[in-house]
Length: 441
Figure 1 (cartoon, helix red, strand yellow):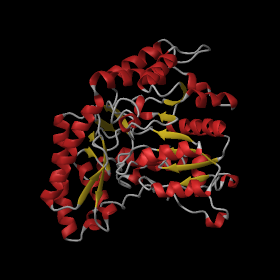
Figure 2 (cartoon, helix red, strand yellow):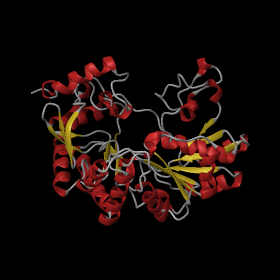
Figure 3 (cartoon, helix red, strand yellow):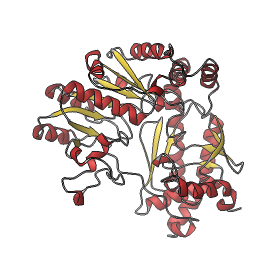
Figure 4 (cartoon, helix red, strand yellow):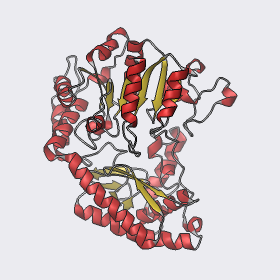
């Protein structure tokens, strides 16, 4: 059976979606074109542990992004879901506030003793927007030096604006600045991870940088004391240093990755990594800085609902109890070793970068994207969701790792022959997957 026949319902529904939903989905990273155009199952009926069932009843092992990094404990975790169901039964929203938001604030501050106050949102992008608003309010300066990806809002996307709209660049390739006020041009100043000289040049040329935003860790490692040097520059120019921990937080250690690096920011932002698939965002920071929120208007009804804080409390407490970061590292190392062994066995030029809990694969060929697409195609035929990344989950048990690597072995055998015979594109049953936008880390 071809993949088009196997995934018929999902493929057809996505065609309908593109007619009535701009872009087909709400998240760029979930578009089927990013995985396997015209063949990806696109929609799910059920998810549990590390398995996903699509609309056609196919059961897939998910060794790709596990809810785009949101489900560190696995899909529909029993303990988190039990707490959430109780919160629903007791009322998720009313005129009064939920006690869980105070309990969560106390837990986050206990884990991060450098911080003194907490604000909440419900998504990563809006949490970053809150953090930036507060930081600008505190610093009274407009310009931001930034590294990495931080969301869809105007403040961030304005980095792609030029003085002349005909010259709008693609610093973040693939992210269009249409609709972003031109008055924001020049307020966002980019620098790359591990290139401290770029940040030094920015602050030397701009005396009005009041905020520095970055992910303290991602796929690249800090090999030169880079993050510490950023902290020193922020201190020197009296800028607010914000660490975006939305993806990396609680994945490598309990709390922000900055705790492991022993470099404390002025503010840190958490979201999907803290609540196992339920919407939640938290902005923590030094008390005098977070208090600046009171000098601006930052308020939303659904930031007061009960499910998000309840899910975060259950998730973080389970991470502590089960020592989840240690498990993710151990399992990730096994997966990385297995991938590299399979690549060597089949003579494939593969690199695996990133921390063990969050791996990124790259095929070192001129047509690497086509090879990656073929890999996804062949893994899908073997009932495994696979792509350029493996976000490790507590739900990954030994038998799942073995199942994944067995499929990799078979897929790499096909890739090896295709590369040797220059037939990669011929073996694709659909178009090459779209590349993601360019990152700065």
